[in-house]
Structures are given as structure tokens and as C-alpha cells.
Image (cartoon, rainbow, N blue to C red; front, side):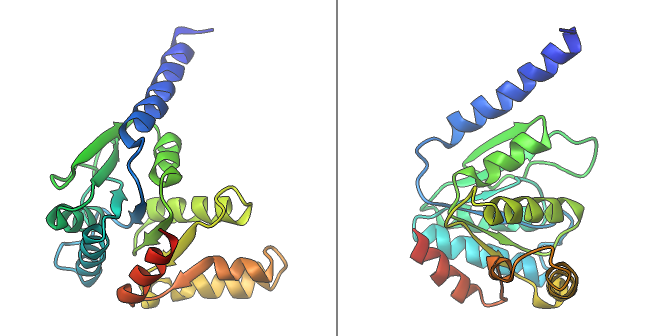
Length: 206
């Protein structure tokens, strides 16, 4: 085996072992996804902060990608609640991603796939706010895992009815209409801007 392959295997192993060590025995948790580019004054950042605060007040840990934007808002809400862990799972990137200062536990990953695994492994649900390619990647990862039964009982909430409506339309009019997914797959996603409703639904899972 080449030295480069050994190096990558070691870094992959570190990602998983460090992640499991950081998150073991953390208790009930929810993952919040969203853009790193969203300003803290944006309506979705404000909603993310409030939801994270309210959930953390109930003792529910908040897990994010540890960066700026929606992630920072969610971590800030959980940090402010001071009744649960505010967890940031960051990644090494050449630009954009920096760690926010509102975490009680944090870890920087080498690879996206190991980070995505750890972002949801210990969670009961995820709440997905508006975001770009990275957020979409995370969304479709958890959609696939839920659809295929790898994450039984896991709930997926989308916040941003105006933002996501065309994606939902595509899923219904293209994927479902052409037989690429089953009718029950449409129920995997709950689209709502009512964070009180989302909080209540999450609390039922805990």
C-alpha cells in the first residue's frame, strides 16, 4: 500500500474515532443544517437561533456544521440556553468555513463523508434551513438514508417555504410523477416555517 493511501486511511480513522469519542453518551440531539453565508440578521438565522434556544432549554443538544451563518445562529441559540450541548462539527476547507465561537463541543473533520455521518448519527431529527450545494448534499444524504430504512424514526424538517417550494414541486412533479420515488416517500419531508410546530414534533421523538 502506498504511503499516501495509508495517510488517507489514518485520517479517515481519526475522523470516525474522534467523532465517536466526542459524541458518545451525549443524549437526545437534533441537527440543524443551513448556509454558512446567511447573515445573522436574516430571518432564517433568527428562526434558527430561536429554535435551537428553545430545544436546548428542553435539554436537547444542538449539532451543526460548526461554521458561520445558520450554523452560527443555531449554535448561538443553544449556547445561550446553557442547558444542553452546542456542538459544531467543522471541516478543513481552503475558504469560507471557519469555526464559530458558540460551541461547547467541537471537532474539525478531514472528509465530508465522515463529517456527514457524524452530523446525524446521534440525532433524532434534522432541521434544514436555506442553503447551497453543501446543504443540499446533506439534505439528500439524510433523505436517502431515511428512505432506505437506515435511519428509522428519523424526521426531516425544512424551514423556508418560499425557498424550498420549487424543490418540493420538482420532487412531486418529476421524481414522483415519473415513478422514481414512491408516494410514501413524499411524507419523509415536513415543510414548515412554524418553528413552534417543529419543536413540538421533535419533542415527541425524544
